[in-house]
Length: 247
Image: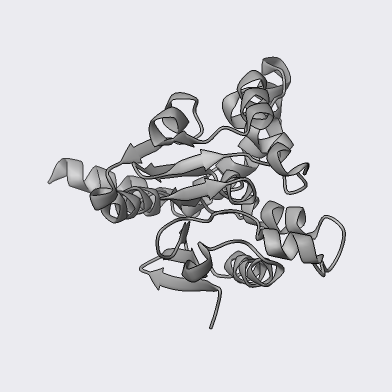
């Protein structure tokens, strides 16, 4: 059975971590399948948005501790981090849809998405320090960029668990919705994204990536000098809008 499922719905690809009996705890095998799906999505122009979520009771309880204890056969040094970087750099929006547990390695995975939508049941935490581990999938880089360095230090030092409301307050999650409305909220935001230009999405992701943490003046200069212009769908989109205005 596949441990990462892909389902396509009218331009939306849904990737589902699929070890519900193990709370979707992350293994090398899961990363191998996730990587294959991500690489396939680079070549698939029919997909304009990606949602990453978990099957069953939660998004993921994190890195499989049994695998860590036994010693994992990782293809190369930094391979997990490289896989998440490939997902992060997809030229289309990626949403992490989090319900239930999202701890440590699972949080590193979610942070590699463009943003997080959380169900009210979502629980987050970084427990590296609890197990005498250090991050190697990106926590030390992405968490402070998302929530600020002082908050990242507090969460990493205390290993505290916190809920969806706190995730929203500190800027980790962009939206919190009741669990009963979770699927509809995910689909609604994905459809809003899909209604807009895939050219703009790809160009904006590259622009934001290139200028993140730059000083304002150099960022503005980069935007001017490296602007990617207009997309092939510009005339059609403006024409359709103008046509509606005249009707």
